[in-house]
Image (cartoon, rainbow, N blue to C red):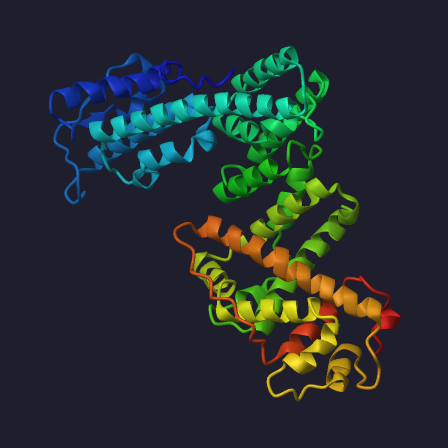
Length: 456
């Protein structure tokens, strides 16, 4: 059944309407703190019953509240939560703004549900419906504008606008609506600003819906998996993963075999070498996960590969706990991360490559021989150009993509205001060569160069 984004249609849900009618009656009588109450045995029949004010209860600290009152309050809140969930196609599809208004942290604790709280949720539902309706029309305008840039005829643009309304209007839950609204331009318009065929559009929409359904089946209510998966599906740019792949990726990311000892050692003050080891460990985990599952990552469509990698990586780290993740977040925004960036710049933007460190190093006492010994294991053996370029490329990916991606990932998981990034600096780590050795070892381990380039 399609999700109706018009607030009046959403409120046709009989259970929710019962609660709203009760709350509005109490508020109009000046009783904002009136407590909603049903009997514990009436949850399944709430749509056919009248919700009445709870007597002998109060808002605030529950000391002295009878066990029978707590049971009745829990039953009432459960019925209310079910009513809200039914409007959006299931509890996992309730929009975050509505969840925030519900204050889900108060559920299951015997606390009363007040008329004021019910109307706060009603307001959030109305705001969601209004914003969703506006988003649909904005999506229509954006698709039409894209087609205009491709000099598409007015009739075709109008038809595509109606197709957009049809697709978004057929969403059966709030998650589908959110994701498809985000992806609608990629679903309906080709890269050359020409309309896709109806068959292609329908296939893409069905693929995304199937991914969302599989995600919810796999997550089994785990909010972190749902958040990570929803972000991944949005990032696929209108494409979708084949059946079963989300389940496979979830199992890989949540596997107990994932090694995170280097990540767990990270502190806010961790140095460049420790940060490098943690980054490489996450890269190693993902490569090993792909290999164990038989997925040939290097052959995957580029628009699918990075979102898949980010999804698995997020699942790998999310179980570490907020304290450890906060340490990691601070380390990736601190002065030692800035030194890593300076080192990466030093070996990438100078014609002398790695050897340029000789001039950049404080005191100038690291010569070519020391660099060659760290990289080649022999102070008299020059670094082959292919190996040097590969080290530079891998290091650049760690700095340019992996660190910012992890930073955004951690910001999203932890919420709140992220730590201020340390100011840019040209200062290099005092252990620059050890950082390069760690990257060289990773290059060797991952098979990015021929073994005989490394030496013993």
